Image 1: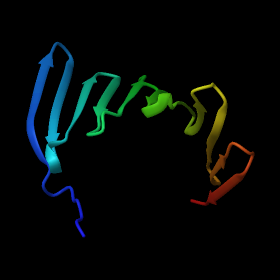
Image 2: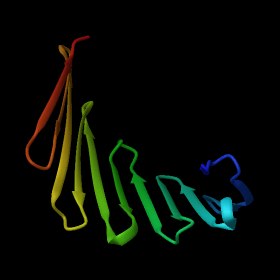
Image 3: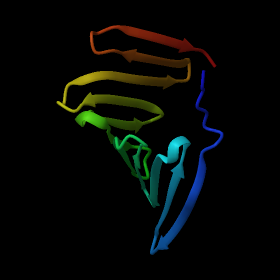
Length: 137
């Protein structure tokens, strides 16, 4: 019986490109049987994007933008047109996040409420299921 591992995967090349205020890195990997995969990451102030292609040709991407107040938006897409988006907002130490699927339906939320008496984090799933964790200082 044969087992494939990631150990024989070699980076054929990594290219770093710096232009203006952005920095990009690209890597190509060759695995067992000569199949190749690639990954590209680009960073700039307030944003990061990445794209990848797997050895079977499937592709995916993720983009994140942030502002100076801790708010962020992230979008991701994968094989078969699957995608999601996450919005995070911060205010007075509280954090609220909402995750939507490619159809715009909310599939999860997370709220973190901080106060002098403690912190409460609540996660809600697509069917309304909830998990809450509370901590005290």
